[in-house]
Length: 639
Image (cartoon, rainbow, N blue to C red; front, side, top):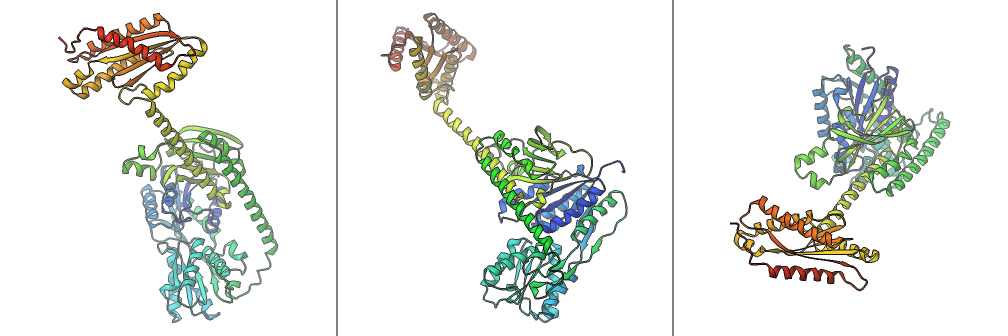
């Protein structure tokens, strides 16, 4: 065990949010100390309120190959969709791997590292009632399918009941722990006919800060008009004005403890679940003051400048990549454009992986529901990596097994990798892998950049398909569908160029006009299907007689034409001999109760400036017609 490098998987959502970042930092600290490799599988579901888009985000959890890992850390408290969460839980159970879960005691088979949500939330609610006299209290909750959200909600309801305050349903908003929920909740509360609340208790800081900002836009003062409280004591909560009354939780310690506990489980040790303590932080948003508020102002200024400067740099990167991708028309150009900028995300390596046949037309290839679902809810068995950036060098891998996850295996331990979904709406296109860099967790534009690249790849896929459709339409315009050779349109398009070249170069032009004998006889006696068969076979003979510098076409009905450039009378004679010989061979092979016969007339002539192509075709037609008249009555039935 000592020589083996431990591989752990972490399943999480929204890794660019502060709660997740704090826990991840703790996990990474422990993993690097112990020389473990960590692979995060994360989407950005629930952010843009688009169900089809969320399907594409959730698909990243189908990528996990549990056979590659020694243990799993579950941050399913960050995943809002209960159906997706249950799928993850079942897959992890089936893996039989050691598992540590954060803030969830619903699964006794998993080791739970939790933070006491109840006691601190009770203290916050009691403080608002007892110290600040709030009686009308609203609540912005997380999803009750989430154990943390349920604990905090229950604590809120119980304290209200203990203080004889009715929890009115109109004063409660159920969100997804996202910042946008704070905005939506305030809009609901202010649109209600109920009197405005004295206080709004929020289940996390992200929703509280968004709610405070929305109230400020509406002209309300905090805490003079409405008290706001949060939960998590995030960096933004501490440095917002007014500073947020919230609950401090040892998130970094939580992540470190989860990683440490998982390693001990993998080593075969007996471990018990751990519960860490949280404590309330009373500050300006409820009307309290804190002696600590001014102590960190210098550090805050430095941090604020760093964040603003980093945001400016990141937006510049986003704009430059977006502009470069807008100029691309194929995947090679897109990969080259991304490769010019990818070093700016400051990581050790980054790979863009695409499923096999990512550029197909979905409606054609995935017409059945099961095949379509296979494309939406999983990955192809083989992947390509058209762009791999590693330590300043760009490379690619044409094909690798998806089960291997990495297109190029990493070396040694202490590697931190982030697997992020690449998709268009619900349709899977592939995934990104970023190793040993903080861009996925620290950058404000990671999600936007991923979406821009994904949309660009989808636009290229559509452009490829559009070009294919145009090519096919053009083919249908010039190709006879029955005989598979040029129709009159195709003949005219190609023959004009050949005619003009012969005229310019002073070369001879050969024209053979062919008319099928007895098509009506075959149709009347054997059916139109046999007539079509006879036309197809005749066309194949004509096509086989076309050599270099010659073309053939179905000119209409049972009429065909061959056009040859730079030809001689000997060429014409050889052509007619070859045609008649091939036709005789065909009849002996197909064994039909009728003969496929045709008349042919050929001219070879230099092309003068006063000549017209259709005038020359008419000459060949006349020669063919004279030969047809001289034929004896054909007997189409075999003897």
